[in-house]
Length: 118
Image 1 (tube, rainbow, N blue to C red):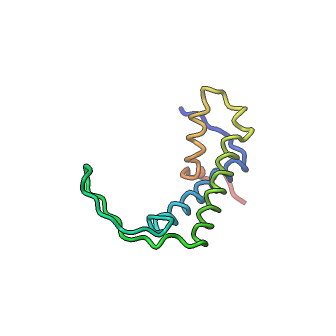
Image 2 (cartoon, rainbow, N blue to C red):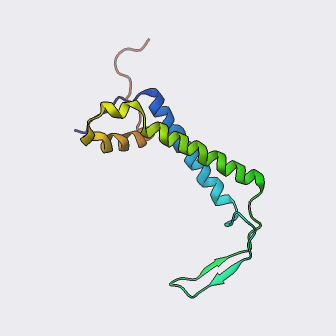
Image 3 (cartoon, rainbow, N blue to C red):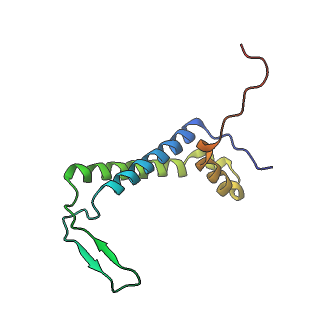
């Protein structure tokens, strides 16, 4: 049976926020033009596949600021999660498994309560 880990609430919260920030950043980058700076469109079929890009108006200052804010928060959270004091309590050989379990902890369903309820 796989080991279970009692992750501290602040570590779980940091990991969950990290997931949210990464999802928000990914969605934002998909919506933005392909080039940060204004650029002409191009078509190139000299490689192993054809690459085409339309002209890009570039990103606005607000869009650049939003991307920077999300990237900065993503970095802060990654440092917090990876450097959390909890990892010192986990045996070195078990850290990869524990880290993987933390990354997927939000997917787990909590156990059903048993016994009488008040």
